[in-house]
Length: 268
Image (cartoon, rainbow, N blue to C red):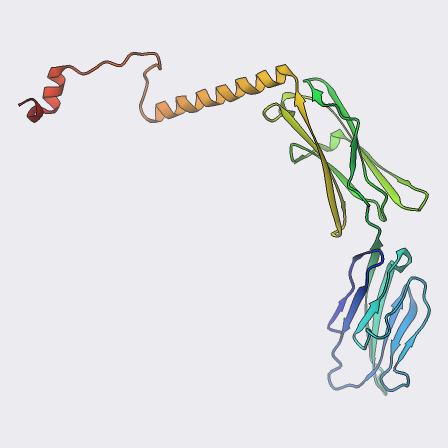
């Protein structure tokens, strides 16, 4: 067998293509068999009539007309379609050499909306406590939730959960809390951005973000830090250029004698 291509995650009701490629060298093909969780559901035997046989297996709906010796197509996959799929290839008599390989597939029910943030306030001051929750919409499997503060991953000590509950349809709802005491470090120019990201494997990625502002003390601190940074920058620049004069020191014009000494021809 040269390769087996089975998608790890597919979305509910999608059409799935499973590829089983093989090279028998000089041997003749006897059969190709497909199994789900150990139960055969598709058999291709080129010397038999009919060449294709299909067997009922829960969650497997084979498209007979699009499937062939190397390809199996499943229509309208559902949650029971999740499982382990195996392709088995056998050569002709007398050896009947057989090779097989398998892969796991999970059917995903996507959330119908992005994650929701609750519990936040529009304004915080230093030493306030942030207590917020991020809740995903129902899905299968549950979404993986992550918190970010100013686009940086939140400290794990700030996180509460996650917790998972199952709704009336058997879908999973995930919730992840965020709790921390506010400090000046949490603000950028007086603002603090809190974002929750929800992902499911490689098939789903959605986020929600809230921007809150600090009170007047936070804004003043931010302005003072900005001014201090600019002042330090000017000081370094002056030292680099050899300037040691105070910004309030008056400028003194050179005397005529000094000009004559430096530019004698101009005086003549």
